[in-house]
Structure formats: structure tokens, C-alpha cells
Length: 283
Image 1: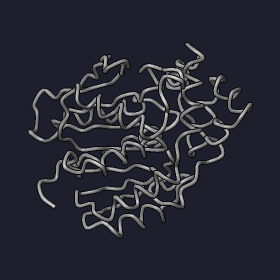
Image 2 (image 1 turned 60 degrees about the vertical axis):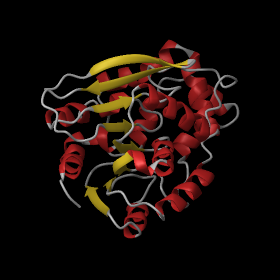
Image 3 (image 1 turned 135 degrees about the horizontal axis):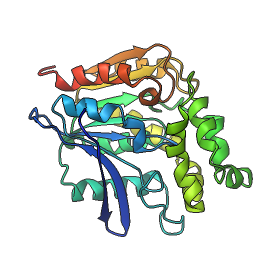
């Protein structure tokens, strides 16, 4: 197995944590950037990263600012809006000198990565979307929405068990305890992690983001794969079908018995769809 390396890098006033695989035999293709959703971490890509490395891809999976082992700035120091995340991501990619890459996004907050990609199409070689809000019909599910509510949100986001409830509420599987320990750790370490999640949910501006994404897809030319877990209680397959039908290079792969977090539920199915798409020579 290709080993996953873990790094921290200072980008302006913010420190990013990221996981990376460097292949022993590079295949000459662009690197792959994988962005997680709420309330997750780059750890969710732990089974996908080595598989990409084995196939010759350099792959990078950061923890968004406010999540995992990246910095958890207080809301007065970081706005936790899509614009703030996009600005921070732009600076992160600049420090890593990632000027062209294939982009893989998943979930709520992965949608912010999609906003970035649609704004910078010249940087994106191929796009893969896993169970991400992508149309105006997308709504924040109650399990996530309540994390941003006054009073109750303040309490829930200080409870490490919010991770269990949300990750397992998104699909048919129980997450292994060892994995839950990793996901809970930031919330056990500092109350700042909970405040960052609260601020993110409150400021996700989903309707505005969906309008931008819908408009962006009307001009999108890059090869795009939508990998959709059919057991997602929050984002139906019809959403992916609507987007794919409007894209010149849009394809869908459906995953049975997989929920909102496909890379957590059944990573073998995910990399089974992802790698042939990334390796394909021509479209």
C-alpha cells in the first residue's frame, strides 16, 4: 500500500493540515485534490488516497479551515462563509503550487470546492462529484441545519457525539469506532472546533451557492463524473441526473447501498468508479 503522509503548512495566518500520497511511479497525469464535506475531515479519504497512489496519481486531501487538524479560528477572525473558504483554499493551492488538478468534492462544504472549480475552469482537468448539493432544490438536512440554530446549535456542536449522529444519519452503515474516534477528536480537544462548525453551518449560504453552481454548469466543458450513493436521505439521484443531462461531458455512476458519505460507506465502490475516469486517455 502507498503510504499516506501527513503535513501542516502555514498559509498566511492559517495553518492547514493535509494528507498526501506521492506515487512511486507517477503516471504523468495532473494531481488529484479531494475535498470533504460536513462535519467530516480529510480522514474520510483514507481508503481512496492509497488507491490513487497505486495508480500513479499524486493526491492531496486537506482538512478545511475549522475542521479536522487544520486551524479552528474564532468566527471574529474567519468569516466561515463560502467566500472565506474559497479565499483560504486559493491561498492554500498557491502555497502547494497546485495550478492544474482533477477535483473531487463530496457533501455540504464540498460544494464550496465546487464553487472554486467553476470559477477556475482552466485549473480543473476533470471533476468528480460525490453526493454534493448541486441544484437549487438542495436543502440543508435537519441533522446538519440544527447544528447552526441559536442555543441548541451551541450545545450540539460542543457534543463530540454529533459526529456519530451526522455521519451515520447520512446512510445505512455504522462507522467503525476507531474511525469515529478520529472524527470526534477535534471536538474533544477544543471548544473552538465546535464553534467553527456552528459558524460554518450558519454561513453556508446554500441558496446563493446553488444559484452560482447552476449558472457555472451552463458553461462547463471539463469531463465530469457524478458518483451517487443511492441511499443518501438528503440528496436524491434526480439531482445528479438533472446536472449530468445538461453537461456535454457528464456521466453518472450509481452506488447501491451507499449513502451521503460514499468514501466512508463503501470506498471500494468509489475508487472503482473514480480511477478509470481519471485514467481515461480521451473523452
